[in-house]
Length: 487
Image 1 (tube, rainbow, N blue to C red):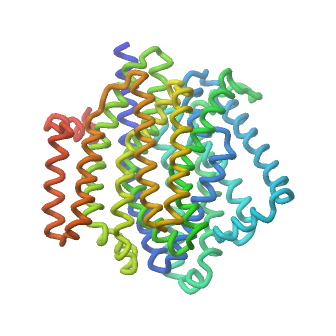
Image 2: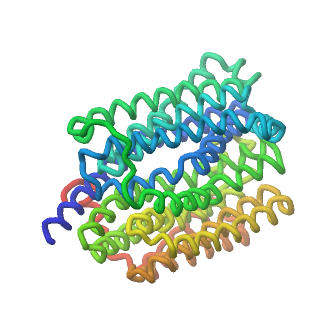
Image 3: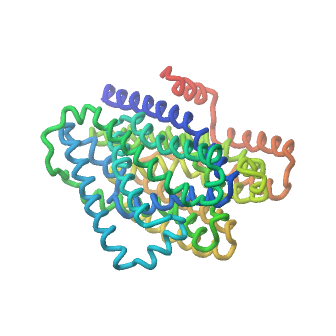
């Protein structure tokens, strides 16, 4: 037992460290992409956000579960069967994709073209090719994560980040007039080549794995339990769509592209704060799946609790800073964004749910807690959709920010409820981070602080979080040593 748990813990720590390093290397590129496009126009940044809306929508409804399915079934599968399984899975997805491409233009051409027009896609055929390229890219990264090759999986994903940075830099430095005149055409055309490049990188990395070298003769292979995992994790994808994509989509439908650009700018900070929880989650879920398959579920939940405590500790100071310095943070995208700082102040709170949502949802699938997760997810979806539909038309982009944050809190609570019933220990730090951050939001709205006063308020809120969250010197020392690779 000790050797098994210790080995998985070491591989998890190493994988998290590798993914964090890659994320840190790509973060400046990602942020620079948003800044470059935002300084050209809010439209350019809005169409960049629209690319992720399209891809996110397709992966919600077109891939039959995706990453969680591989996380659940691959660790318990014989290594020689893994390539046959993932290729069979991809074949299913491509058959369904072909059916969509053939049927939808004949049955729902009007709504399809109107929606693509709102996204700014130059042509339906371009959208079809982009989505086709995302399939091998996505499944390559899923497979690499499921086999605990986190660095290779992250490299596949970061190819997209690097590609958009290059496209934005070239557009601003060499083809600025073209980008300003036709931002939709430029961004969407670049997206096709970027996703094709990422797919090529992912396939090459999968081909170099031990699973590929030791694979049995290829055959049609879907393991027992595949379809049950697909049915539940498909719902999880719908939940993730509501969590990440629904509100930006509704901003586009009810408002306009410039407003989406401003909202997208605020959400970039949330994405920035989620990079550490996302890195931990990508490695943690397959690790807990392996421990559960070997009969060590309690040890897996111990790893989850430690991961949430650590990532909450890393996330909360940044959230407090974004709330108290929201105007300055939004002005990074251009001086015209400064007046929309309140959007960021509200939406930044949603990042506090990231550690639980990202780590907890993957672990719920890894331990097969589908029924409880299904019930909690349905309740969340109903409430989140109601919030979005009710608040965006009434309050505009501020309503969208409120819907995102309220929805994130509800989803976090639902996941904690499910996992607590399965044996997850209590994590008081989660509540401490929300209370201290809500307090900072009230102070920011009430006082409209100067930078000096905001700094003082940040120190005071941080002191309150350290005390209420039970942060200790020993914990900080251990985290530092692990990130440095000394443990």
